[in-house]
Length: 172
Image (cartoon, rainbow, N blue to C red; front, side):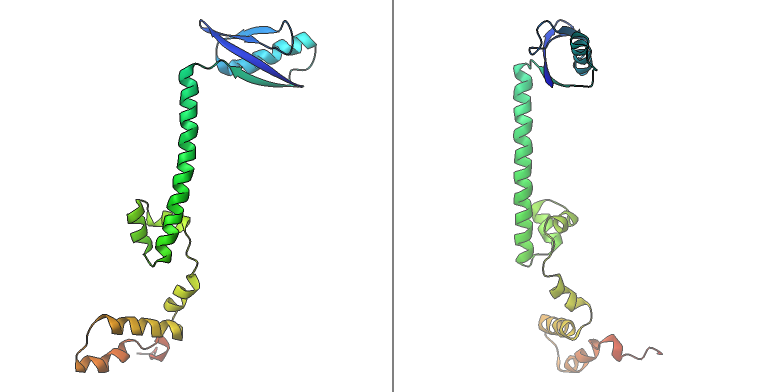
């Protein structure tokens, strides 16, 4: 069974009534004592164990408290909405090729937070470019070759700079 402990502030005390059971009234000095006090009163009145029923504490809230609770609830909802918008924006920026650092700077969050909000889905593409596979090697070579103009003598040097590690003699 569930009983309601209706509480009204009276001076320095909380006056407690239980509408489900006629005649059960009590008082408590602090709101956190209302449940235990109400349990004891109900158990005494019904001659049952204090933990054989549930008690819901329902204090009479001042207008300021009601307004503050509504504001906090609205804040939590707005925070969830903002978090969803930031996650969507982070994912969109990464999809468009922005770095994690740039996305974080634009969104006002850390790069680590960007990574948690929008994990990269194309990890296999970037992994091949960094693992030394033939495709990754060619991607790096083409990217460097496209970056800077070269003189005639540099054309011969560029292929030597990008030799895979397996071509180097480990003994030298």
